[in-house]
Amino acid sequence: GENVEQHPSTLSVQEGDSAVIKCTYSDSASNYFPWYKQELGKGPQLIIDIRSNVGEKKDQRIAVTLNKTAKHFSLHITETQPEDSAVYFCAAKKAGGTSYGKLTFGQGTILTVHP
Amino acid sequence: KAGVTQTPRYLIKTRGQQVTLSCSPISGHRSVSWYQQTPGQGLQFLFEYFSETQRNKGNFPGRFSGRQFSNSRSEMNVSTLELGDSALYLCASSDRDEQFFGPGTRLTVL
Image (cartoon, rainbow over all chains, first blue to last red):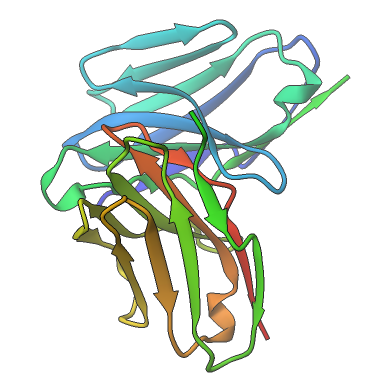
């Protein structure tokens, strides 16, 4: 089945710096790649996603890039703020069939932004 | 729109007991997926329901089951609880690819 690897497991940056989190996936049939932010005591919050027919997507300070050939995708956060501190998860999903509703998650990255 | 709600938020059970968790999806969403989150295994897919039918199931033992009602609300049940079932159980609501998670139910098995 699908396997998603996420790096780094922890990331510490100074406020205002950029942060990059990378994920690789194993199944070339995956076509949907969301990113989630999880704060303590809360469920994962969808922050951005990208589909396989798009190479890059941006939403204010957050951007995601996808390289289908290399089977990897990355989250970029610019001008980081202390409130960006959380655990970030990448995920991958295939279309329909036996993959209905199934997101395969990476292990997570603990991002700490120091003021 | 109101978000995904899960009840209860916290549960403490003992080994051998059973438990039922509830999830109310976002209004209009017909798909509900369930996940187990633990520090060791991360987020793992349990099953997905759409219009009262289970369409997909992850690699969990038969002690884990679920159902969905005509109003799209979903329940999951774990029978004969084991210590290893202690986890945060999350449900996610969707109408297409995007999945929106609830706050989860924290289950502790003693």
